[in-house]
Image (cartoon, rainbow over all chains, first blue to last red):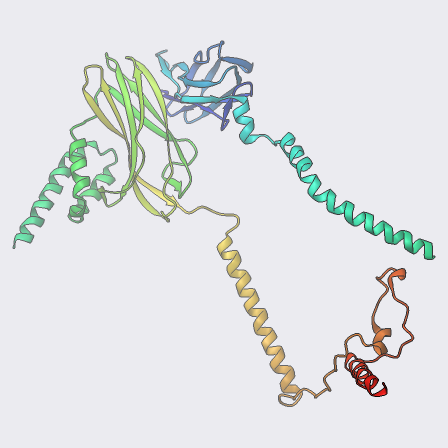
Length: 164
Length: 280
């Protein structure tokens, strides 16, 4: 008989509100025969909290050969921050020639924290405005000595030109 | 004599424990290995007690478990690198099962009651209804200090019925190999080569130095040269002082006075002061 194991994982290290996240489903056939009519559906992402950007939440394969595997990815966007318990997707397939139907669940990622955008950018953005502010604030310490040097230098230059 | 009796007791308890444990053995060779290594197991008393406690649990006949390692070939793990596994659980009975947790541990391959590394127990608490299947991910990282040799790996799945009957199933119980990481860049050997090359260079330099001195006929004494007398920036050396960096207006005109050392000047003034009263 065919026997399917399915994992559901996030490819992102951080889940951030308003930023895309990738969910990957991988189905392994560890049984001895071909799995037919494999259907994978996932309704664990509620439409109020997650927006579907790309991909299908319900897919099917005609057959998955024994000791083969298939992957399916979906891109979602969390709409708000907070802690979410992300549960499993469901799987159904016909395991043998007699048409015995099996139902199962993928693995569940579990509790995940969706970060606020500001919190995420505080740690991971390139901080361009902060760097500009830093340069502006450090400019006087560089410009003041330069001005003093330049004024004395130009005085001597003037003297030299007069001589010549 | 007392000590000997104590030892015997320990061995007996080990044997008892093994007798119970054998029922969970999946791979026959693992069981054999454990029996042959039974005498050396007396040292881990705490582990034995734990084992005996755990052995109250048996797998349920209505449940079937299996495991695949998704990022590495089975029986071939890298030290210090994460191993991802996917555990399948099938409920073939008529009542709900609750998969509570999964734990894994590396054991001494000759004696599975001797623990080498324990991994965290992960709690799932997932309901699996009758004639349903579920998958669980369990990731662990073999210690970096493990080098190429076989280890016994046991992955246990704990589950229970709603009535509270608890079960344990060793979903993986066998020997795996830990292989070393094929690093592209090994800093240690790189610096060893650098050290060796620099050592060779130093040796060649020494040989060259010795060779040239011998060729010249012994250690030739360096020719004595008169030590240059430092004169500072005296007037007669002025031409040697580079003053081009100074703006031209700042250089003082050469004074027409004859240069005199301060000492001479002092003498003349002192003479003057001495002379004047005499004149008067």
